[in-house]
Image (cartoon, rainbow, N blue to C red; front, side, top):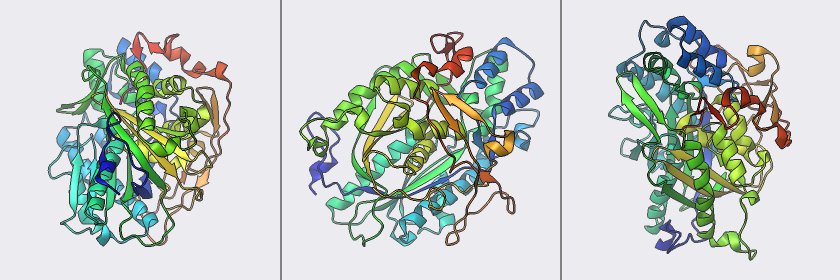
Length: 489
């Protein structure tokens, strides 16, 4: 492999066909609770007076398309039931415990699937937008995993929901540098977010400023991890989960005021404008074409592949983001099935979500190549094209699969069918599993719940049903009172 493989410029360079970069293990850890839309209403009614803005937000909350969101606690969690919203100090203390716990468990799953030794991990690339302490949370994850303290660490910040993809891109560059030097690279990638406890801070702003803040309807908690290898010195093993063919990072011009996550004494505050869904959807096509043109091996058949030639792992930032990209790229709901399912079952877990979507995507047969895509503050667009392993692992027994002690949708409220973008997804129960060879620490020892990760899915392609479930909140133009409904980050 030559140094030219490092170039991501699609104007003057291209990706060589022998990057030899691959994700060889994935791990996703959701916390024990799945909370439905009613949880927000309970807290709002418990602590805040009725108002026009709150009524509008609660109306939007019923029609986001999200059935449940993953959270470290239920509606009675002590930190969101104090007289005042928790301070950033309170949030940091909790992240140090719960965020690190989720992260350690996600990393254990990825390491277990990889099958290597933690002594062989050469770098760690981590990201979060819901904690900013120093040393970073990755320092404590390293200690709990027993990884040598001299491992090279990079903690990415300020990139929001695009963080998981940015971490993959950063790890890929590090691995290529090691390849150039003839050295092995086994890079642990980690993303962790705890957003659920920002609910009181957001409700404060809705109440005090009478703002229609939709982030409070979307975000959830999760940690996800992956191992990226450059193949140098690698023994024969089960092979890659995903091979990395190329990537692209770009900033949408003059959009830094449209999307952000501002620091606040009570945590962080989401910043977004009505332009976000339109800007994001419009940027995908030129970025995709540029990236495809930079990967020669995609053109071996003599013609350029179309967007529909790939499966898509799109960060599910909100319903308008998913449907906007689907329409802009002339995709079908099946191309985005994994994104829809993660969005509906767990919500938007910011930077940790994209690895969860990739983890979900590999459960079923699909196309050989995958486009992974996410948006973050800036507005930044991250895109990577991957080739997935032919074999499809068991959706229950695979180490990377979530084994959190979750309360299933059917346990909470009986069997539910939810229509999203014309797709009817029927959820079925599945029993949570643990790994005998790599036990995962539980937040609530002895409590065994169920997960929906092996849920059966049926898809309805009737495009006339698109957005019918959202129309009551969104209006004809996909907006609530002129504001975007739930598309941020």
